[in-house]
Length: 483
Image (cartoon, rainbow, N blue to C red; front, side, top):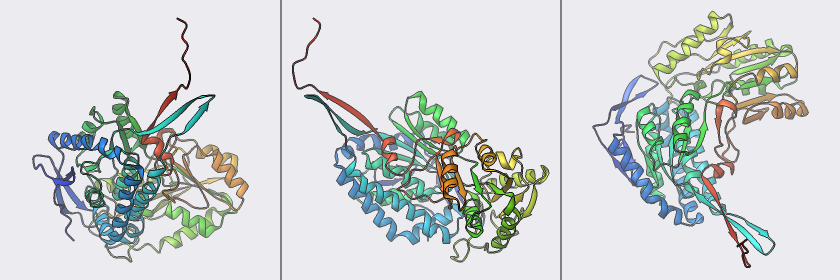
């Protein structure tokens, strides 16, 4: 398939180019080769996209929820029909194995479109009786929403932000990460094909300056970012200048707690999914794996055995289950953390090396005997590096699990369900797992506490973040006044 898109941007229902914009080379992480070249949005392109979204919003909001939902559900159907091609493109964009993208990325995007398409007609207000008088509420759209995506799940994020925004009657300008700019353009194409009016869903490319110009534009009513904590702080501050609504889905250093009584095979599966899926490039990953001392060595032994099942290679090969890092820069960052782990005295159990092949590959890496203050236990790595820490008691591990500025996710493996629910209640995290890890169905809310973010994506909770309530007081009798 051709990886060079028709043009860099998709605005008002069609592809648009402005070659004056800075070059954005698209590099295939499996080979290091440039597979497309796009152009960053110029100020004229940014203005065109926001003008299109602004012009389309009142018409789109005037459609009934049922009509808007029908478009989203149609888009979901198209996305599922084209799952193979979209998955191949996602693999070119991110380097993630086709074995993964074919079941997670476009399918998750389609799930979001279908879910919010089904919910759109049920977005209603309420009636509050006050004697003879009453209040009714209207749930109304915010207006123009800006979505800023991360590079790890480009198709999914474009839909996770777009679907609830459009269901509520908003329009969107979406800026994907400059590292993975291809997939969102296909989402925009599909939206138009499904019947969305031109201007309802627009995609423009660019580096940080383009994102900054979107966030501070007076036409923008809402900003939704998926990204790192430092980026989130800047975006949040910039959005606050205009008192804009925000959703921030930021980073984490999430704890995964494994008790002695846990099913060992399931616990190892959870640790693998929470550290090595997507080559470790998942914000909610459980990268601090606390293992109760009684099963520590058995856990490490079985984990090492299971990692022999890693198959690296061409990520387009359906048999390959472990891909490269997204970029040379990201690989270099992770290699720096691995060096730091060794330097600070963690025990390297397995991995820790680059791979002698083209592309940005790193071996899955496991450190044991990690202590809470080591850099690999405090900083988000965003790569295939697992830190295994020992613990004795439930009280101790809960305290240590929460001793972080992050609060995105947390998980526990135990056969004692009373303890499992106690841990889930005690975790200072927005998204928790019991005897599993990193499941993200669209029906469930996803998001963080503390510095890991604000607001929630997915589920009915997302409707709260893409709409606002208007209260209307109706007096049925005469109105008295003091004079």
